[in-house]
Image 1 (cartoon, rainbow, N blue to C red):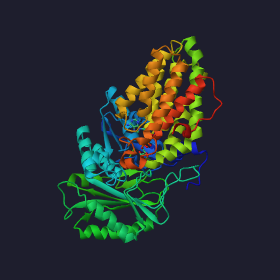
Image 2: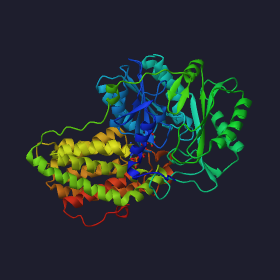
Image 3: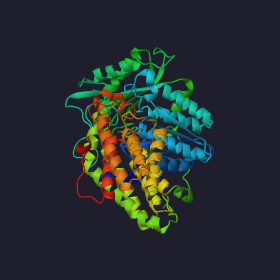
Image 4: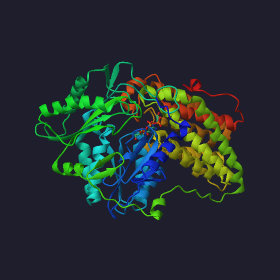
Length: 585
Ligand SMILES: Nc1ncnc2c1ncn2[C@@H]1O[C@H](COP(=O)(O)OP(=O)(O)O)[C@@H](O)[C@H]1O
Ligand SMILES: O=C(COP(=O)(O)O)[C@@H](O)CO
């Protein structure tokens, strides 16, 4: 339960403001997150980490000398947008290339990869490491699908120390990959968590029970038991982690960093009681515990829960792990740092976009684009809860709030662009950037891409016509499928977008007006969204719990069908009726 907040939608931003105000010795605010406020070694590799907020000290608490150079900070439980990652990377770059480090979540992978592409296109050597330490999130044979949890810290720490020691980019990446290969975590939860302003938990655990393997965004775990004693919990965590010792290693004689991590509202004293037994068990297995960490390192907002991480060292990893560092939430040894000068401190601050010239026809059509976005906003607002409920069945329950954040930002940006005299294409392009930027998450990246494709097809020189809109939607489908790799039948929004686009193009080619064609295609979209109930998810967060979602449609497919119907109502001049999930699903 979060008690202290102002406007819930401003929580993440205000949290960053307060964090920077209280930690100016280490960090400064840059567009998209924070960067070091101290000088870094010229030409060294910069480590830029990030992810959703709500996991403090991940990620901003790990920015400082000897640790990360910057952190891209998304909204609560939503990956930062590609633009945020790009901006932070630009602010943090020391001329030696940028390594992006994040947990392996669909939204993070999409956004960080987009940012990486953009940085590379500018000639910056940019690489990525997606941390995959959570053993409960996929079997060993599918390690690349595992989520990143408290093991983020070990990977980031040694990569940063390697960068600080002057390693080349290839060598820093090699160290980060080796640390990831040798880091395994396993977590449990006793309660869910409630986001600021919400009147019910985002996810929950039944009273007196323990969700085994639950993810840090409430992703369903692999089992549930009564809450055990502290010793029994230590035994469960150690047993499962020792059942998966990294290749080529054995417990006896190994040197391991144990991290007993509190997930948000478990007391340090409780953690110490659990760690007491962890230490005994490691010693009984012949393992030497090196520099144990007990405390909050990657949290899940106010969730009560804990995870144990074992980081299996070799001599180089041990040296890098023990190297000095000075970040708000992780300090060791002595580090001397020089503050940036006044000019450097302002680099990377927000800038207003330039509005390109547009024809009068395009400017006249711009308010119609805004009206369509407004209709999308109204339908999302009316269905936030239900979209969250559908997403929670097998995913993380944040689809409603993610869509809400995205469409609100898109409408605000579009309204400002219309005010500043933008053409229709630019209005949609700026709305696209705002959506992706403010919403983050998988759907934020994909909706940003969709709006941008349509905006670019419309352009600013002519009055938007049916052919340009249909071509834009077809391009949206192509780019989303190319980027997200989902195909029709994988139970994602592609199951709506693909048939919608095909129906729209066919109707436009058959001579229908935009309004008629869009209406016919919206009906196809609604039917397609409903049909996703019979599919098993093969992509995104719902994949590990595929069977749970049978009988329920895909959240992203449903929201897309709702939006295209709402836009049709605007095109048809019929804005009276309220559209709800029940009509499509
Ligand atoms: N690879 C993908 N391609 C297309 N759509 C996807 C993909 N992965 C997930 N989705 C869509 O995104 C929706 C979830 O959006 P959101 O709640 O923002 O995601 P998350 O919280 O998982 O990042 C899913 O319901 C699905 O429709
Ligand atoms: O939730 C996070 C990112 O995952 P999405 O796939 O965007 O939901 C974030 O908190 C961890 O970085």
